Amino acid sequence: MICDVCPRRCSIAEGKRGFCKARGNRDGRNISLSYGKLTSIALDPIEKKPLYHFLPGSQAFSIATAGCNFACMNCQNWEISQTSPRKTRNIVLFPEQVVEQCLLSGSKAIAYTYSEPTSFYEYMFDTAVIAHRRGVRNVLVSNGYINDKPLRTLASYLDAANIDLKSFSNDIYLKLSAGTLQPVLNTLKTLNEMGVWLEITNLVVPSWTDDLDMIGRMCGWLAENGFTENPLHFSRFFPLYKLTQLPQTPVSTLIKARDIALKAGLKHVYIGNVPGLDASNTLCPSCGRVVVERKGFSIYSINLKNGKCANCGSRVKGVWE
Image (cartoon, rainbow, N blue to C red; front, side, top):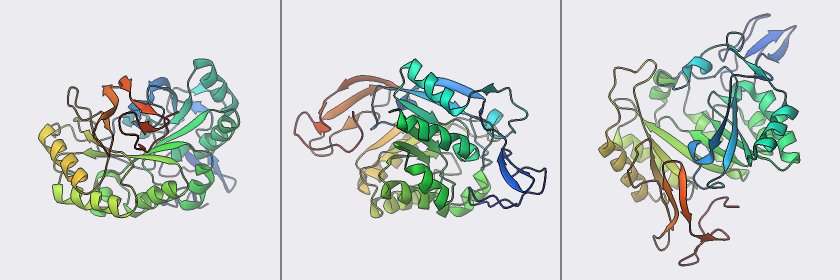
């Protein structure tokens, strides 16, 4: 059986599992082994996804199952991403129950996050359809490694996404994450085309993804392909999983990366995982005033009226209400 959910197109023998460990072949059918089996449930600030231009200050009902179609050496959730749902302690919740629990929690959105949502695609899709019908927003936090047809089917029910653009080098993608670059770039284009609010994260890993020339090429591609108003989050690396021998990302490198992105024409560039650094506020791209003031994941003030800067009246792209 050939799995056509992601670009790996795993050929799965009867009774065996695919690369993500969450899909199997049963009687020639592509079976989701993680359907309804949650390893993680949490109430998170939407800023933690990170989404800075989507319902700031709101709460996301965040869920995940075991499994991932990447094998990132720096994975921060490897205990659930790099294993099978058969080996994790799971909470059984079916799509209707997820939406009901989200509503009871007062959350405005369900975030499919922590591991890789593509690996629990059917569960995510069924939940998203019910959530959409009941007025709950759907947020995808993903590596973007998904085929076009399932992505377009899902995107009809998505309100926002944060895609982890891990590198702008196919060679580094292969070595660091066991994936490839082009499908992720295709995902970015498709989400933008379909009107899903999109933000992008780039984890700057010393000796892997911290080459400033490569970061410049990445930012140039984003600017040339219509992403100038989509937030880009440069995130600081901390030693984890198989890269514990590496140092933390120097703050100076993150500042240089942000400067490169701004010079390339990207209007909203943030730095994450660096407490106290003044690079998390949202600025009006016209007058430069602070329109959303943040400290960590907390919102201190919002100076927007109907999505426009309260000072000069210029529109700031995002989903604010």
